[in-house]
Image 1 (cartoon, rainbow, N blue to C red):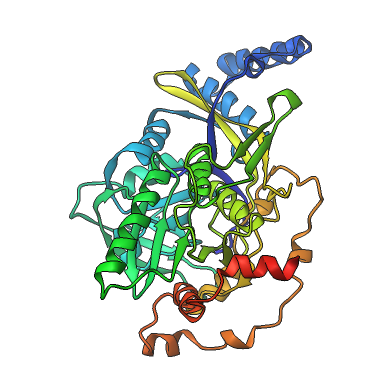
Image 2 (cartoon, rainbow, N blue to C red; image 1 turned 60 degrees about the vertical axis):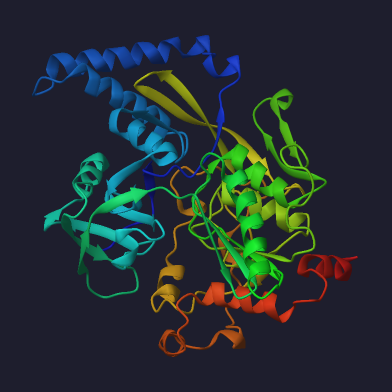
Length: 454
């Protein structure tokens, strides 16, 4: 089965940096468009009068709105009913299901990522998988809402997924038992003397939660033989984004000066600059080296944080090139049952770099060697530049120019089977922790790098 990498509609997780609409310009309509509105109404009348079956007005209006927004870019869309409820659930609530974020990809159901610790992750579902059948029924060129509803259900019940995974010759079946999915945007643990903080999405209070995590990790390290933390790993892998405010808050937690991000729209008067020391005072991890882990699933708000800490030389970015979504969406509520998500600006890192298309390039490229399918999936990874109708980077970046170095680093030749024998399930995280432990007692990684550059 072959699927073109053309993502059309986002559901369950919105990979956006969301801001409230605050400009009357969004409601302005060019009077010259009146003729086109006349044409639209004429087509509406033709369909109502002549289509082979009677057509509901709501269906026609929703189709017109969907088509209008789909013509703009992949991230502008209309939300109502189930799709709006699911977005709100992702921000605030919990539900019973598999724990997957999915999109419609050229008519197929594609996995953005399974949530950490979810039934889907435990069953082996991976980012980039295509779900072709649900309990033996083909789900292709069908409403994505229908597939999502089928995957949800009471905790304890099971569903069989047929999965096509790029890099494998044949589809295979996976049976997943549904569970209660409690959304945990931030989790943390102490590994030896290194604190590992995973940010899974940028929903409410992420900045405060990470601040609590740093405090708790310091206490854990102190109680563990009176030691101290030697460093922090901030894991943003497979994080599709979320609130712009929370991305700024998380960045500000580690920065005590300078810019974090800027956003620029159609009107120069509406450009905004977000600076450090506006949400948190000082550096909550002062004196500790920080490694930020990213991959092709790190998008939008994740890229804002990675870009800010990289440009300010506060952290070493490690992993793989990020998704490359450098646009900002405004969430505009139309009424209690519907809303519009509209691209209103591009964002730029402190150095003025736009991540649109190109993404954030790691300081240290580390492949995920513990995943036997990682290489094949990485070669077929869908990024912003692959999406139909994506915004163009003003620097006219070319993916091929970003991936010219095909030489394998001699440090990364160990196989997944060999890593499994050593008990290493997550090579990228293992490598980040080892790097911090090796440099314990030396100048912070980013600070040392800054001296070399000066």
